[in-house]
Amino acid sequence: MKKNILLVSNYPSDVSYAWWLMELFWCLLTEEIVNRGGKAYLSYPSVSKIPAKIMESGVNVVELKVVQPSKELKQFIQKNYIEVVYFTDRGYFNLLYFFLRKWGVKTILVHDHTPGDRPPPGPIKGLLKALRNRMPFVTADAVLNVSGLIRQRSIDNGCVPAGRTFTVQNGIPPIALCSSIREKQRAELGADEHTTAVITTGRAHPYKRFDFVIQVADFLKTKHPTLDVQFYLVGDGPQFNELADLVDKRGLNSIVHLLGYRPNVRELLQAGDIGFHASLGEAFSLSIIEYMSANMPVFVPDIPTVCQAITHMEDGCIYPWNDPEAAVEMLKRVIQDRGLLKQMGAAARANASNKYSIEECSRQFLEVAGSLIFS
Image (cartoon, rainbow, N blue to C red; front, top):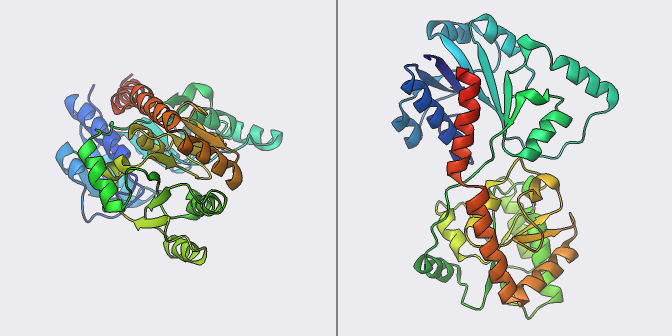
């Protein structure tokens, strides 16, 4: 069945941070649409540098803002006979959808990657949201969610009809472990064979709680000064300088290392022994799965969206949110028991491969999106 699709990016074409998975989805949809005789267009609000995967995919890249009704958007939709629009992180309800349908769009899909735990609304607000979300012309046809927990959030908090919510479990390509890469990376980090390397990756933003990891390092150094532990925080962002000042102020420069942006994160992870992810909320964290795939148990707070991939004391540890002393005691136990550390790391890698593979993620995506677009 021939159909033309518009894939919508919320960010300029040169912004690639954390978007590789969305690029994969765009490429998968492009291939499916083209194979069926249709055309795929990818709109960026501004176009400069285009990612290599996008250039190779066969998608038609356009500079077009798809935020509110406009003459330019209307002309594009009608000129190119767009019947399907695929959004990332847009609301299930949006007045823009009315105009898109008026201009000829038949199917509107939303893929939800937004982070955070959200309680169900109160009875009155919940009723209003439920009524609003049953208005066909201003709501999407379906919401794709990155995990079962996020699908339930769409139903409970978003008040989206359950029959219009679908799970496409996030996944990653496995990290190919290599002893020589591990040795090289550890040497560059200055970690010898006896050092326990704790790694955190992400954006240096208050929401990611790098400051909590630094606090844990401080507590660990004070309470257990004989433990040979080094903390490596990987990532740049608006809080970077503030974090550097915090490390300096607490006299932690010898054990806490702010590495900034690194292009070779997947290689760097192989130097680690423990992953630490202190975020205040996620949709489904790919960083956590990368730690697991790199053979590391992962320490996470007991915030549902953050700890959803971890089973306590099997492939990681779940500590009480914002409790550095509890996190320190869990760290000490795992660090001192090398057999337990090795066992948990192996379990983490196995779970990453078995539950969160990129192949299964791609299969689910094509199955769900294909049934919605071509049925």
